[in-house]
Image (tube, rainbow, N blue to C red; front, side, top):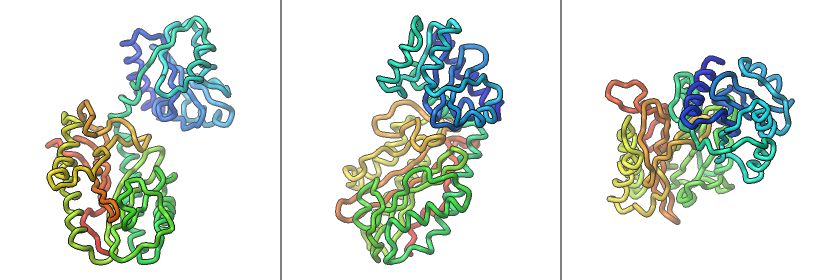
Length: 363
């Protein structure tokens, strides 16, 4: 899809014009992929304020680069950042923006040394800002990743039984997503049962599932580079009253957060729509993380929806909404969906891409 990537580069070039920069050196992997189509562990893009960009990668990815980015110049180099910085100097580009948030101190020094006479300055996270608003092709890939995630959840539910370990359940989810077409899991799958549910990022262990457990599963499929991220909490056996009450609180807060996620809504206000309900129920101290985050080429990307966030949502920004309540020694509940803000709906409501039931399932 060279035309899609060319349109994205044109938007980045417009940002360069605002900074009076001759070119920008893009080094963050997801940003290189967004602007060129090349997925590589070692690539960078030198994008001038006008004209064709120069993509650099090493010999391992040369053929892929020629296939995926045929409209760009290509340089084959091992140390891609310094090579492109030196080329900027040779072309007389004296003001070079760089993704300083992506570079290490040593990496910045290497680029600076490779381009004597070139002034380096920060491009900030401007490509990430562009990436926040998804185009149609990205939304289609996100939807495909979420469909795989939903199907895997439905297929694995019948396997959940007493004696199955957290680690085995996580492996079953990962395996099924692969069978359904995922490139790989979006991140390390979380399965947290019983008291482990009080740990938001618990690593699956050898603990066997037991009747009376709440089981939280946080997982997602990566498809063509785009990430799903869904959390569901189920009960093994008939849930106790406190478990039902806790689940209903989190489900109510999650619905409120999804409803609040509309174009023009402040990030802090969306967070508050869910957080305030949890606080009013006396569990404010048991919900410590943000309400959600952007999702796309990275599992966690801009924007962050939290109590300290600034900024507003726009049409076609894809985010998660994932409130949770975690009770030390007892367990926890988290419910999470991927949704697309606005998404062309007449009333501005978000489109929820992860459609697995959010009723409390007693297995």
